[in-house]
Length: 453
Ligand SMILES: Nc1ncnc2c1ncn2[C@@H]1O[C@H](COP(=O)(O)OP(=O)(O)OP(=O)(O)O)[C@@H](O)[C@H]1O
Ligand SMILES: [Mg+2]
View (spheres, rainbow, N blue to C red):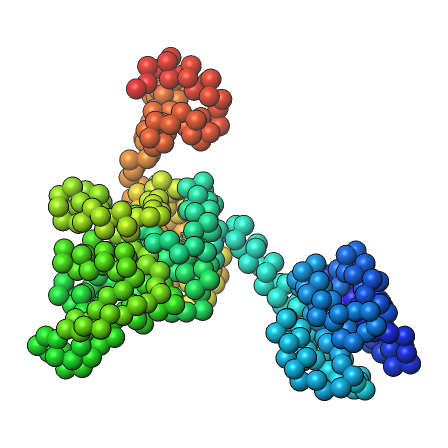
């Protein structure tokens, strides 16, 4: 829908009432098109973007429902207001079910109709703007709330978009603070289950013995202290998604039960014999190397493969440092709002320090760091090096950086930079050349010249 004058298509046979309606709409400032038969209506819908269609369902040679269907198909944003000669409730219900926005009976109350159209137009505009906004946010930030536009993150978004609509079980791996919980939420929010519950269970926060009863529920008296029957998280999540965080922490016996659930989609509560069937999608996360745990016999291999039907590995922040400025910008905005502050940016020195840090706590650590700085900031300031937490203030070269000192030759600098970059890309020559903005051939030549590797 354009921001210009809304376009209204009237579909009704020639009559005094139709002429009155068209005049009224034009006087109200709308651009009006008119079709008095199906053929003309379909042609207009093919060639024009219509904001609102007002259609009489019993027009000569038109099947009203078909018209509604075609209009929506060709232009999903169109708002359809249906008109009938008499109050036919069944027809009205059917039209609404097919996506009509409103329903009016003849003789039309024009001022009432005007209110409906205005509401329809602003509703459509909102839908359009939200769509546009989401699209713009998506382009820059990936999925709502997940920030970063480096290739590693773009790969994550692509995978999330691809698998979100499916039923597949997902395993999210990555170091602490890399955004596993955020991605789990995004998968649910982008799936057809989005209107059903998203239930979380953090296995590391519960005693091993409790995990099983939380996960599968228990009957009254199932064990000492089980005074009441407790529903399982699976039942609570029915129709939706269960997010099992820190999945490495579950005991081997609970692992077998989980495996059975994944195979059969059913289970019994502890102490119960009724088999319960649920429709739950499972997303698991871990910051451990599950494969290693499998090798050590601490995690069932068959469960691992069931969980990792789709495996998404979240990169560490140090592997995507180019995202730091974008993250900083977003966190400044978030914490300015939360703490009622007005930080306008960070100085060059601060950004250098942030870019130089290795961030073992990943995005969470960066986020906390920015929050701390914003919370203590003066009004309308640019954050300077003195605002940095002490551990960031003293500029130590991180494993990604190196010291430049007087006495080095240009060749020394070039050699060291290439070595460091090459190391940071995991010795991927294409990537190294890309980061250094030199040709691949040049890189090969320099690697040979400096005897790197
Ligand atoms: N790409 C990102 N964009 C914006 N915020 C992020 C991003 N990644 C993580 N965060 C933020 O960092 C914090 C930690 O993220 P999250 O809880 O998802 O990490 P995690 O991988 O589950 O960590 P842990 O293993 O410690 O549980 C959250 O506040 C989250 O909103
Ligand atoms: Mg987490």
